[in-house]
Image 1: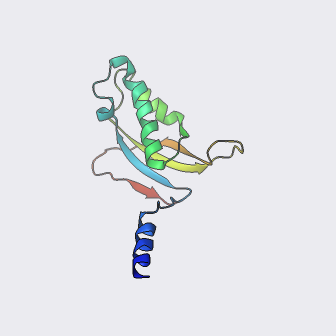
Image 2: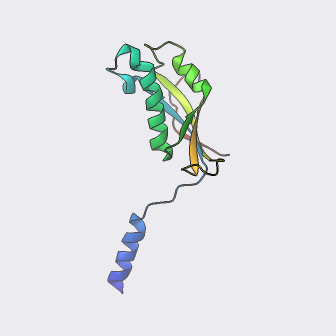
Image 3: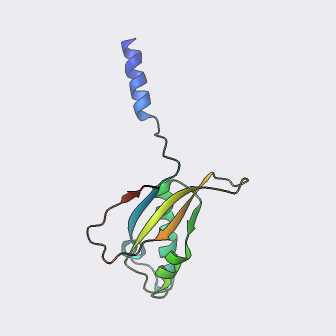
Length: 126
């Protein structure tokens, strides 16, 4: 029984943790390092793709929707020169569409900040 309890303990420790269903967090995404060594004409489109990829990894949803505010901010300096960093609010939400493939999606919203100095990832209580 002692060996069985050890295996059970290890099994429970290694089991994947269930994520909270709906959560909202603020992140700073460093776009410069993600678009480095990219052709000028594809820098900003790549920045948009990288934001989607970041949100997908951070929130664990395939469905990522970028708000128009984020899109306008990224494109504000043109195709060749996307902003170096962006502060975003990632919200995991329930899909209202009944026949959707996934139950949850991630909404990416822009958070305006004066400076990026000393900012950390913050969980927002809904």
